[in-house]
Length: 409
Image (cartoon, rainbow, N blue to C red; front, side, top):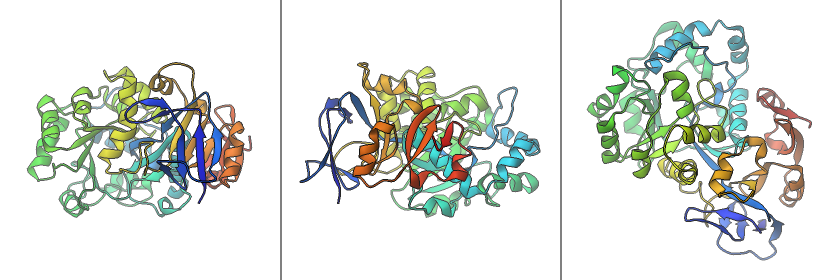
């Protein structure tokens, strides 16, 4: 079992950032040094936990977004408008790519931006079980698409078939609502889109969900823009949670939630949605969240690490503490507050993204770390900058879909 000792860096832990050694044994953070540990000097760097993206649709990040002129009152009307968009040649070309390749590209999108753990909200593609898939996935959960698109009363005919093509399945909306809630494993999150809109339809969805008995401590509501103050209080009272996707909300609906109430109750996580409606990646999402809420940079980093891990019931990720997976992202220390520094970073600014103690993508000067952990690296260019990418993740068909990523340097 390999052992590493990372020295000289400021390590961002849940209590406070501190300059301290970080011990890695195998694929987890250890409490003390192991005999024969390989030392890696990270002086002048900050080490953050790998980010947690609490909501993405991995297979549709390469599909051209709908060219909407005005915000939609709710997401169901957006879905109906998308029907004509399927005739767009760019959309037809994107959907001709097998779903497995598109899922892999969705994994790369997250990995390149430091999101090492992702909650995928669509039918499960077999490629997601590949041991070399770029990111760690939420696996123990239940889901349904939404109240208005659940199989019991979902969209019918051609539109349903076409939307199914987005995720490579005939039925993209998951199992029936109440059935999926009842069959979710004890203690696992049950996830659905809810309140994705600003109109009466969206505002009435929380009450409708509670009426059918599906609002509970493990309920995770994605978006929640239609939730009013009383609804927010009810979510907190029931121990449920919301995944905030501000980029998607603003693009589709022209509005997003006020995060403070849910954050203070520790009932909020952060997600990107897909590029079909959202921003480029979780780093961009953090900046949008900073511009459209009152959370501090440190609170936003908490939202995208420990809070996301807790809401997804994944205690082994989101923190650089003993027993957690050794997932991390590393940036250069410029003297500013660590959280502010991270929010200023674009993905090419990340010096390294680490999964299970092994570099996944990093600057060329991290080559000794690749060698020390036996990771074969491929030279790539990311947004114009040279990088090394673990060859296991560098599938050419998927990489070709990712803007800004060029295999071969």
